[in-house]
Amino acid sequence: MAGTALSAGVLAVTASLALGLAAVGGAAVTAQRVAAAADAAALAAADAASGAIITDEEPCALGARVAAASGATLISCVLDGTVATVQVQAVYAGLAAVSRARAGPPEGF
Image (cartoon, rainbow, N blue to C red):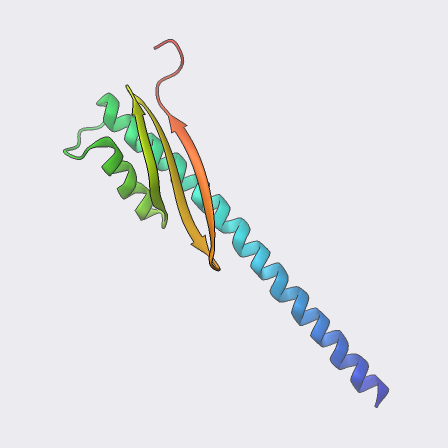
């Protein structure tokens, strides 16, 4: 009888740890996904602003579309000439993951 109780306790602790690690892993994946979405959105907006790509969309609208394709939402987009600074957000388990990115030509160009 004591072995059964001990086995049940070990199983409960193991299950709790597995669920906790799964949640942490999911949050880490979401953070990386949001960072990638911010990078892609900033690059798209900067390319559109500089004329590197031909599009009928405004640069920030293109950045929003790229962020949405990555499963994120564009929160802000600021253009300073051909430099785009964006902020995107995605939600995981009710918590928001936010990332910022900036893209444009190198300094001095």
